[in-house]
Image 1: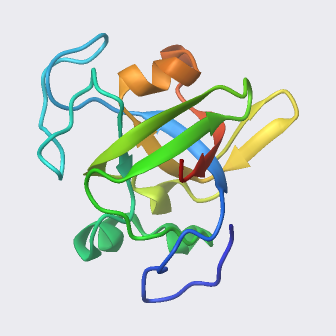
Image 2: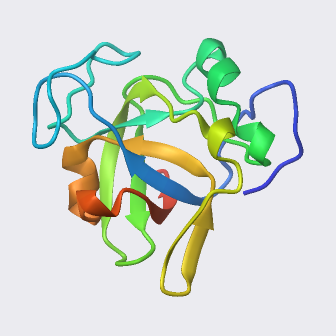
Length: 149
């Protein structure tokens, strides 16, 4: 959902948002990840069904700035759940916010596709456990839809 740039974070997710999903490591060692920090919420774990969201707080928003890419995302805090649906396969996973990220403004216009199905702008990072439910970790990026379950 594209919105004009604003100094203030958007208030609500009015409908599903299409963008790119990637994965990141946090917490205890799991799969391809060694032990690392527990994320902005202090609960992040690579083996859990969790994600990083670019609008968890004012401090997070100031770093990630998805509005720089023309994307408005709701303020959602630690523990809030989203449904992430892979547009390539139609499979989905429900995950909870455990960190701030990705730094969307660094990836404005980035595009990932599977066949003719494409999406732009990296909007959400999943833990490897969650990402592997909807795509192979080796794919790295996939087009997805983000919604509220």
